[in-house]
Amino acid sequence: MNKVALFIKHRALPGKRDEVRRIWEQHLKPRVVANHAHEAYFYCYDDNDPDTICVFQQYVDLASSQEFLEAPWYAAYLNEVSPFLAGQPEISLATPVWVKGAVV
Image (cartoon, rainbow, N blue to C red):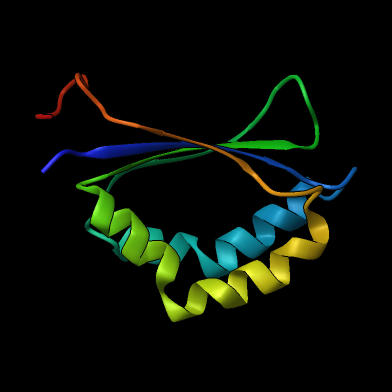
């Protein structure tokens, strides 16, 4: 099975980026920490846009990424965070071919 990487860009409503992070920390962060299928996860603030969040995730495989998004608690996260987002996220799916310090 191939590993899968996701690059995600969220745009928060003006001045609401920290609120989006608070909701992410409440709902997703503990589940990411506990999820062994997440081999890497970076939650980043864009230095050039005060309303943008960039996320990089690497999963052991595509099925694991889909299972994470289909979990019943994920809908609660989306329901709470959506009012603070300026639309749908930009999502790019990629296949890692080389990772420093890891086996691909």
